[in-house]
Amino acid sequence: EGVPDIPRIILAHNPFSCTKIGNARCDLMLSGHTHGGQIRWNNGGRPFLSKAAQPLAAGLVQFHSFPIYVS
Image (cartoon, rainbow, N blue to C red; front, side, top):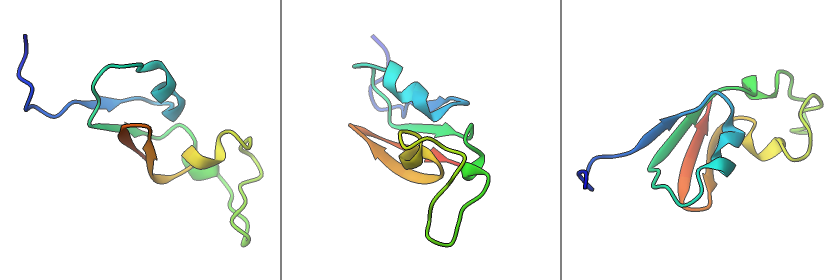
């Protein structure tokens, strides 16, 4: 049955893989695909990422029931 106390960490190149996890348990996802949005303007915008990608551009983000860290 597995060991329930062992943390489950997912390494995924693209942070949008979080949408494919479904009901599987994940304690932390680590990603890097967005490269921090490449360029960030002073007003905080990232012109090379779509609006959908902005929340997962960089840093720690809570996605439903688990955190995602994008570096």
